Image (cartoon, rainbow, N blue to C red; front, side, top):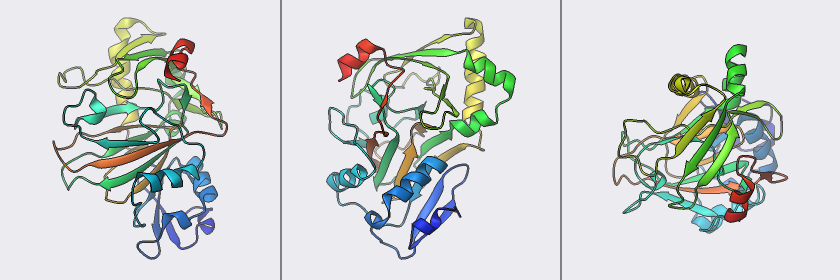
Length: 292
């Protein structure tokens, strides 16, 4: 339970494994729009991930967008407010393939970084078909990192480049460790490289590491993979139809496990900006201008 559970009448609140809270209605099919968003927002900021399961589902993207607007200003994309995460017939990018997606943070190539991601599961893969969304609580990770490692990581800066073949792309430059914009606690800003031996990965990003010798980069990648996938702060969310997930994009890294080709996985996602909106410190000024 949490000390804010009293602000959410008619629900039960429990801990998820590794991170976040599970919120379930006392009576199945309750409308999630009856829940006070101010209380949900505070829970999301404290616990970084909320799973609302067993509530009535939204009828379509318009209802999801309207509910997301109650959380704050919507971050708009060329396609609008809602990204339809579903396998494409001929994908150009791994996001629309059925492959895994490495851990990353959203908005890294955009002018602003969203505070929250709102996910709604329209259709879930069957058991054993994969397609879990993965999360790493980077603040918890760094709080448990020894001082020497923390200092070494603090000196590292990473430059990312990826062709714009769908709705994102360009160049981003970020220290590996940055302060949380609300709390100032240390967070990890890292886009994990895809596996080097995976020739089928679509639209592979480029990485350049500064702050350490080139010969030490492979060991760093191995170290970061082990740290970010530590079960103490790493969580794989297996979707059920109707699930609503609110994730703290300032703190968490997220990705996806691979899923069976043509499995019925359909997730809708909306980005909500912070208060005030966080201008992206990783995007060079010329990139910001091009992406407006």
